[in-house]
Image (cartoon, rainbow, N blue to C red; front, side, top):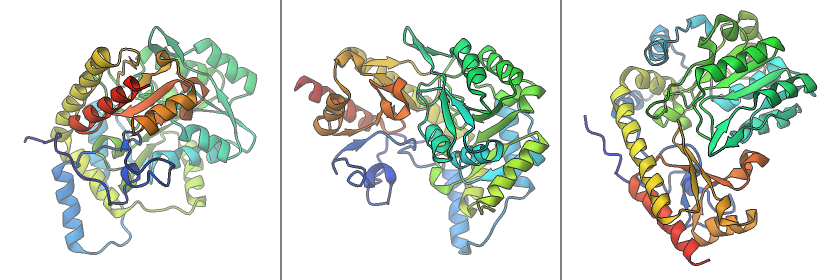
Length: 391
């Protein structure tokens, strides 16, 4: 089946966070948004068909996934990641960020330390601080345009700060690293050595570029599995974020019980009906759509790479290994944070995610979402080029 990813779908006027809340977020109404991590593509037609069937039925009562829901999720992870999950491990939540917060509440107390690696997805920092925990940062190292883990610093920070919990981003958002097996094993050994629990956000696991493989951290050893909460969802993969369905896997029975207790204490029980339906349909029928999407995204990435090289050579692409979010280095422009914001928002009329949002280590960078029709991407880059010429 052919899929038309070049088709521009007008999202304005749909209460879309990406397009309809510029003024509320302090931006101009006419900005072109390439910020929040959802896609400008309609989801797979097979998913739409299942959802339309539910809408036609017309009853939206309390619902729960039965065995076929779990089997669809299980098959996906066996076939794509060679990871055999069990139904008893599964805890369903409305989102991965919610799961991060629940893990922090379940496994730490106020004043405890939680480790992350900045620049990293900014809700990591928010759920740590908002729950009155202490953030400990072991920053990634940028070495010749490539981010690496500073293992020595990470272990020192764990020991010096009595770290209880580590929020791992894998694949990493925003820098686009797909961690190699040896890197994950080294991380795991450090965490085992010091009794640190790992919450692994693997929501971007389905998006890797050629030559890169996503390894499920908990799947690397039974010892790693025993200390890990693995956070997954179909939302990024199939553009379903608004339907709020995530699958959290915890093989350790004691940890799972603690986690479920935190979820219960938050007053949450069943998933959104439409999220349940969409997730099952995605994992049962969405494969061909996803394959076509990944080809298109790789072409979008190549378009950006070549455009920067030819027209915007002072802006450098940090070559991504995964995700549809790209990390651009604007430091070559020699602008202050305020000047860069003025260039992008006021002059280029673009809405991107400033690197500073991801921690101090992200200053001078911008995150751009390339999951959009190429004509939109081209327009954004042309607006940026024009604004730079007028500086």
